[in-house]
Image (cartoon, rainbow, N blue to C red; front, side):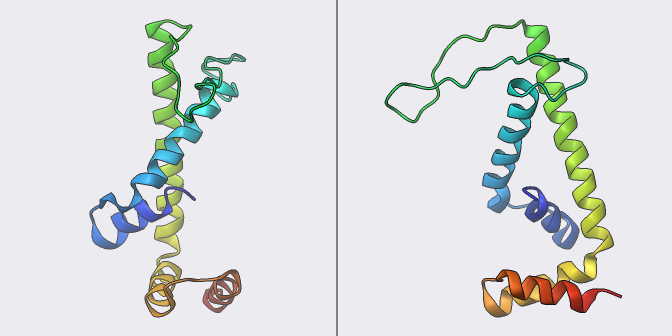
Length: 129
């Protein structure tokens, strides 16, 4: 979901803008948490590598030193990249297969600026078949 806007730009315009930066950051953060905090990597096994650390009263990450090697850091980075690339490929395949729906949604957004759930459900039903 977080990569949808960026992939839509790739498909429609053949280029990307800075508009999807926040979504890409959130997708990267989620992938990092999945790999380093929640142990969701077969390559790294059942381990957690980063504890949620932040300053006591400020909403900024602490500068605490990591507790794993450079090699493990590279493996974490590789796993995050692999996860994001796999998600990107799935989103690209889905949006390319549903290009008509994507185009209809873009037109609806231009018309209404905001698409509520009922509008989206109606659009999806109208493009089925």
